[in-house]
Length: 457
Image (cartoon, rainbow, N blue to C red; front, side, top):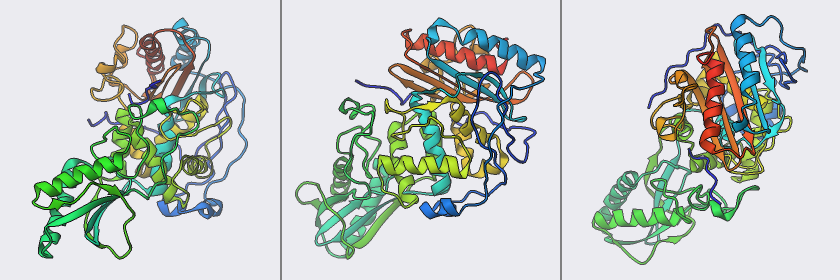
């Protein structure tokens, strides 16, 4: 089974009229669980250096939340709610659908349809992964790939850079060859060290049918995003070819080894900033980037580079750093490929609402910028994916920013749009189990987003 979660500058998103603290949400037609942020705290990677950092962070407190219905909806919001109540019953969406709309300025829950129900969120999980990665590592963090020499062997050492290219390896080979020739060496063995991550395993909710098309086994070394079973040996073979092209003889075949502490560093490559990687990962819904980031986030917080280690850090970041409710929250991977993942629409909306707060702009801004824009070519909301192209939703082209999610039996869309009243709205829609054609389901969901925007009145 091949489930699909991998589905440029985005339109500027400039929320207006922000409050200085998060107020308690009021439920419109259901119960929305969330927490009140009592005091702003600058977010730094140092603040989340390890388990003790979370316990020591006293900058944010929480209180219980009111559940009374929202009062005094204006005419535009009332029309939106009325339309959503009708359109969420679209037969294409099936019977297991949830949704929520928040007003980011007032913090009111404008509309709630089973929003506390935990459903399979597909790639909307990447919103949680990105939030944790940027918070723990920082948006300026870069991943380093190294080359060392010892005992006649050049070792290519993986540093969790999922954006490493053949051109990057060529530069590493050039530097390494210069050192070899200076030492009078003309031949060398090549090894790869991917010991930064443990041996790949399947996440809860994965199966071997995912490999290597939907996702590759998660390793610390890869080149050109190749979807192969052993990305580390593959990268080593590409590196060996670059060495040969530069005039050095490579003895034997590429093997896996652990670099020695006595090896001599001869070259290194640093990735683009994490903010740029997150931007790309969200635009294209790249599963492999997401899973690599989950492991690097775990390491950044002093945890094992595993599914469990990474998802544990995600939970702690969301709940203890940002006050996001984790009621009914189940996350087992970083990409959303897991069929065991369950996240309520209300929780996804809370994560997205962080993007509307100026105090988090420096840390989380690349998530906001990386959200696909309706009609944006090259993103998962582009015309090549048939999004926002029907009579009801095409009016929202360029007006909706949202993360897509697609698995067999699960489609999600969560994002931001400026409503008819000019105020920014946060929304999340998830459906599970519809038997309709997936393209038809997406059309119906795009229509819900256009309804929130108000262009489909």
